[in-house]
Image (cartoon, rainbow, N blue to C red; front, top):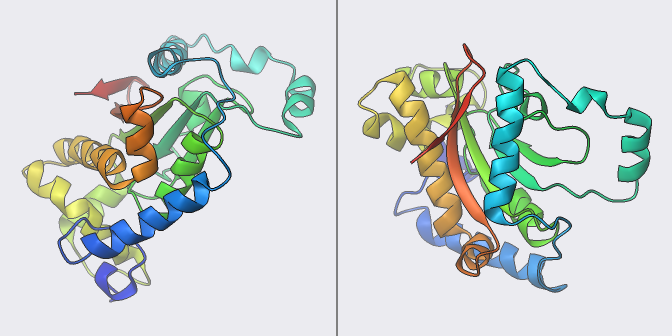
Length: 231
């Protein structure tokens, strides 16, 4: 099996990977900011952006979606030349977690990055840095979900084909923190990945320091559809 350390394709957070990770992120930060500071496309502040997402989730839980009432032709025309998302979400690739539906948002409202296990790879961090620094999204939500297959697979640690095992290393700290309980590990993973965003990315850390951005971890319950922000 090809491991995370063999490929260097992700971020595990260990001491061995730390220096190279920081160099990668520092370089990405410089490239993103070379053209200037963040140009916010939304007038919402960090708290208001998160409140708007959670209000949309409340409508989703109550079966009172409003996003489908918007004229798709107008939405497409308005977002053809530019995008103006008010929040970013790092979600698992699981098909049961349709981010826009879960938060009752339509075209152009949410900047979404998805990867199995909602882990912070260099590519994912770069994408979220772009959302925050260039598009000006004032809130990032790292969304774990009930019954996450990636966390479960990492917990079992069985041999798997191809590159699937590359997901294991970034999730193992959450398994240890969660005491090998799946639900606890999923929540811990969202918290660990959110903390990695806050501390490993100079771009995100700077925006947070200036009060322009907040990063939170959250948990999506498949059974109820409710999203809960984790402490």
